[in-house]
Length: 290
Length: 233
Ligand SMILES: Nc1ncnc2c1ncn2[C@@H]1O[C@H](COP(=O)(O)OP(=O)(O)OP(=O)(O)O)[C@@H](O)[C@H]1O
Ligand SMILES: [Mg+2]
Image (cartoon, rainbow over all chains, first blue to last red; front, top):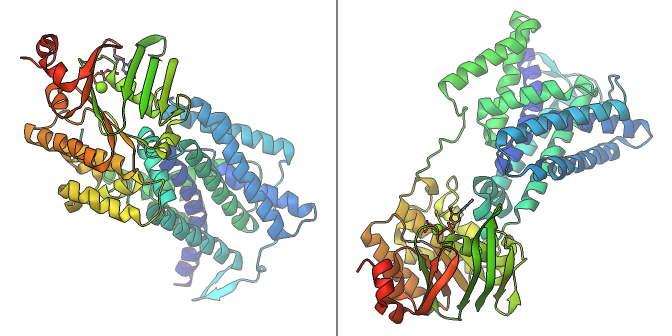
């Protein structure tokens, strides 16, 4: 029982990180139909920039803020330099461009920073909190809380605000969006910066637990992508649920089987779910008439 | 209100508008008729800014808008209900209408939406449904209503009768005619030349990227050449 609780808690923590990455996917996908495989790099940049800014003597909150803002700018640059010039290209080409961009960002990070593993102190100390017979790090609560907070924010943004709907409209029909007065170029800039900022925030929250190095983005992008697909690409609720589910699956597999199998089991379950529900758990059933 | 001078436009290297001249005065319903591929849609796309212009000029309400980006033209009072309806299929009917008034956030938005529902009651019934699930006729109504939510001085309509049953066509033409009473100037592109000329003040005939004839709607309907080529009489 205690073991189960322990696995649940650690699964929630990892799942919250996946959920944050998946939420980042959601935003860019909603605005442009592009799956941005550089999403993991945003997480890495969030962690790495905070590490180095903190090491340079800045207080942690300021270092984190700088990391989030700089990463958002990288997101904007990715859009302006790589995605926008290729507008009109098939979505597959754009996705390949994002894979290329992730390689470039990773390479740059390796040069600008280094190849070491880094961390900075946890926000609220490293004293585990006892919870129903299991122990949880205070930092884990930060991660889970952060994911939940961002989820609520995005949900409100996309369903309650006109700007959020303008993002959805731009993705659905760019021409029509322009005809109703939406500056679709600005919507893209907004989406990339928001998505990058959320990725960076995930990096800031999780680095004290998992540590960060220039190459952590690859795995995170894959897991976040899997989580988003599981929940239903484009749906914030799907991103959250998909992320948490994936985290729990991994933790259970690692706990009860072996951590060797955790990736494999997770992906098998996802494949099975997608086989039964190709649109993911919350995926929109597209009803379009021609 | 709207004045088009020697307008040229091309898809890649292929020019499809070869110097179109056209004038729409305030309060008029003006129609552009012509066969498949004459360039009517291209002309409207140039006017709303989603198709680049390669020569000539467009003046709207006394200002040149030839190079104004598409998303800024609605704010100047030029709205378009495009060919193929182009509604936001995965948003609700109500959200489509709300986005039509994207530029506004005052109380008039609600009043305008009630207006739209009064104009097309079926949209009110379906207000919470995904727009992609509407029938063709309902989508057309939504496209027109959305364009009106932007409070246009001038509305560009591209083939609102396309693919609709005769009864619906009549209803749509009635609505277009009623826009006069709302001080909305209309530029109506149609293959259904007879229906369009019946409600229009003036008309232009386009053939392969040029205006080949123009005049009052009554004169055009009476012209034997038009009767033979476009009215099937
Ligand atoms: N996206 C495009 N790319 C290349 N050529 C195009 C494109 N759209 C239209 N054309 C060509 O431009 C010409 C004018 O087309 P346009 O759609 O403006 O005609 P139209 O009068 O609206 O015809 P319809 O009555 O069929 O709607 C045609 O020869 C057409 O083949
Ligand atoms: Mg056309």
